[in-house]
Amino acid sequence: MEREDECALDRYIAAIPLNLRVVARAAYEELSNNPFLPVFSKDEIARLVCSPGFQSYLESENRAGASSLMMLCSAGLATRH
Image (cartoon, rainbow, N blue to C red; front, side, top):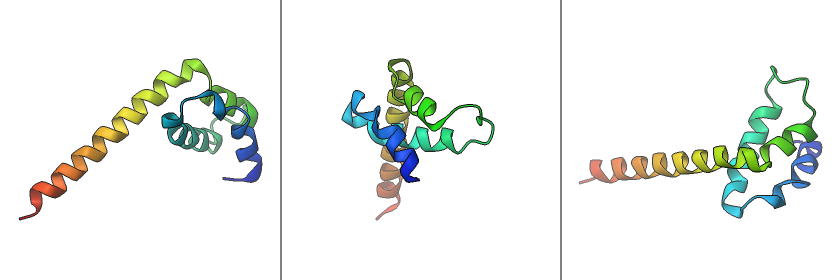
């Protein structure tokens, strides 16, 4: 992530819970690198990702990531003898 990106996101990321910050950074990076969203500035994308309305999406992504990780771990353990 570029320094400009980090500055834009760092201004707003403190407003969201610690457990969602990694997911927020990933969402920010994905949206800011999306060529179909050139009309939004890095600052606008950072505000969107850290907004209360976007937080429920981050929570669901966080849960989905945790459950897929658990599935990978359990599948790996099941294949070991």
